[in-house]
Length: 215
Image (cartoon, rainbow, N blue to C red; front, top):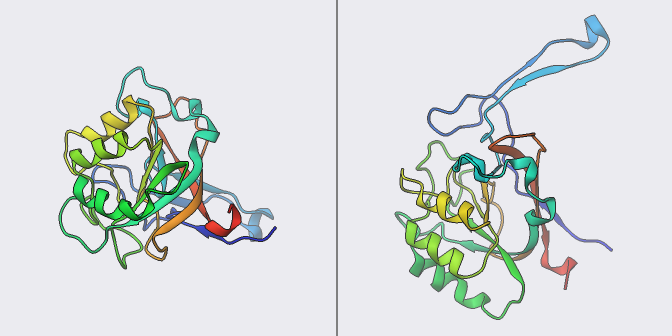
């Protein structure tokens, strides 16, 4: 069987933007082929660097850590909504209007939100269009189990209402995808976070399979 894979992961480098106050990525070689015969590098990053998964322990003191989240909970049939042409925070009425053409699709468990047209990397937490709290309620009410965005946060408000709503109700969060070159439509989504024991988040590799591979 042949099908197309689309890598939607934002990579990690010293130039990868991070949320204000988060550690900046540091990657440095500690050995060299010339001196040691092999290369080993040291990497220092925050857990929310590049494309990453937020665990409930990011928000809740007794929440599950990222290694306790089941791998199978990060895959499923996905709808990608393109909301990059609007302004301001993404509202529930925009989601409803954009989603209307996909209401006949069955077993959609993943919502991907494209908020930026051309930028591969968002330069600050408010680059791209983040979700209003009412949009978070819409997402939960529509039965999605994963919400994945191309911004550094699923929240437009500093009190993090969407983080709290999603993680309290078992809805997985994937942030900072690279969606600028992907069109709206139906895909199969797979995202596997690193198994970092006891941690609040972890970088992940995220891919899409085009619709033809599962119809």
